[in-house]
Image (cartoon, rainbow, N blue to C red; front, side, top):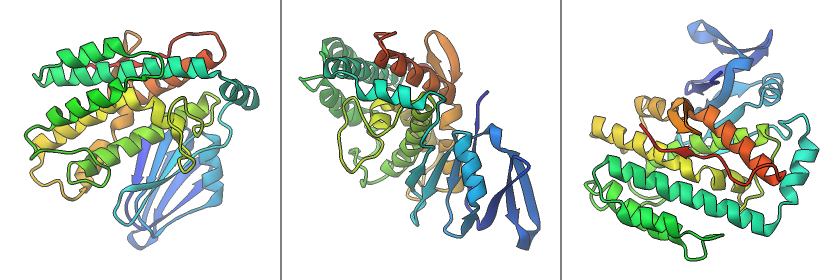
Length: 299
């Protein structure tokens, strides 16, 4: 079952009652209930939201990701359960003991999947992708020749080619703001799935940064990024003004977990596909599989 993403942008009180999330706005006499078991992610986008610890505990027990936004309405913090798997200690041991050669092979697979999906999106847009397909075929263990970087440079030079010489940068001009928001939702979805599969999201197979608690999530989300990119392209076609993240734009980006993807020959919502990907990653750490299951971009 696909879990729901709940977005709260007005001052309110969130608490737990009878295994349900209760939303209260007493001034407007608004009260709404949502079963906690149906929730996959909660986005808090107002500094005047009050949330009870009992609800937080229940959300963590349900392996629900809680995303906080800052004053610019951009995702700032992510809360996840410490243990999301019944055999958590054993699963983490497999993750921590994974050999460097294995992690390098897994990163090779990840880069190939990422470049291949970027190439498929470019092809959908009618942009030549022969060099992308060649680069994907040349990636070696750990990607020592940085084909990921070469592909990224070509990809970003072309995907928004009619958007005034777009340059991808976290703090860059729009549509970077849309990409940042969509990637944050994607990151939360992948991190949630990693925890549910018994892994800690801070120990990556490639990304290493002592200030980043989500290195593994940043690794595994790479082949999924083109789904966000495609969503942003559609938003750009429908909106002339994108300097501000409006409620309508956020609503579309919040649907990232429910986006249909093709994975292992089957269509499924992205959130479900992410669970298949992270489960396959854990089986690679356990020595039961040799390859991570990633989606193939198809819309």
